[in-house]
Image (tube, rainbow, N blue to C red):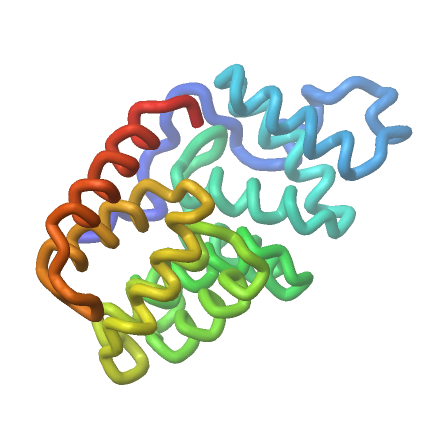
Length: 212
């Protein structure tokens, strides 16, 4: 069962952008949207989620695509605000429609899972994953590979799946590296090759355990 978007507000969250805006210094109006987003990321990494929301909201309201994506992630995960998948989808769309590859990938996920009031729509998910993958975002390439691997929204095609997993793996995406290992292990889209399988499994393990 999906978590309700009307769950009780968790500790450490704000009621929304209007409340959290009071956390910003008066001089914030003189900052660029890019600098606001940078400060939001710093606050987020410090786990000061209300302050992060304040910065992301201010930058997002100015149309800064990266901040719109970050704000969507906060709503999706319920960090700094009450979880609200509908608002998350709205912010991801704003970001995606400006060509931000992270927003494109996240909007694809929302369509894939039918979250945020969106229908489960493989064609839409495929469209947004492809846009993200074409901008060389590794997680977008991995998501597009999954569509081909599972035959979601298009005929199943292990060779195409392998191509997109490889692009993501070459950029260090551990999930794509793991998937390549499984494909070599089982001979899916490529001849079975235990040595190659182990090579990709080892890379996936190293990247999962390494610094992000």
